[in-house]
Length: 203
Image (tube, rainbow, N blue to C red; front, side, top):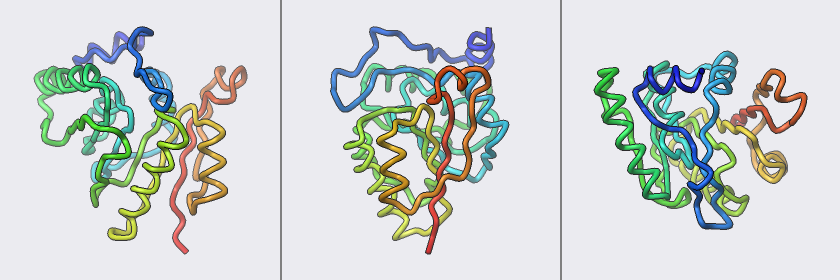
């Protein structure tokens, strides 16, 4: 019921389909973050209207529209799959018509994650297990290079984070775990059912 409620509220269609896959060993199948999980995350983690959120592997844009609607923050979705990209841009039109929100604050880029140029204002990055550790390391390197030119607070938000991701962050970067948000009932059965939020520590 919650899925239908938000899809109607936002006037979008972001449901997943098991046949909708990326034919790559490095890029994982599309699966939107459940709305119930997003509600739990944002009970414990605050987004400001001047934050700039980037969703790597945004699919049809669910997180993008949820954040823009609730927090009025600029959002950017990165998607390599052309069909998902087209669905996301169509959703943006439908979302803007119903909510009358300025679509200039909602951007989608069709490219590989590692090809996206991190913008000086980008400061919140979301990952729902979108790709392999090899791609993640390239993306993270791009993020860190952008910090060298434009120092700012920097958070990485993970849902269903792989052990490889967390090991690399904690052993090879200056990011530190800021917060863990476990999903009620689900986490007891599967300890990947949680959000991990890392913040860059400056020396």
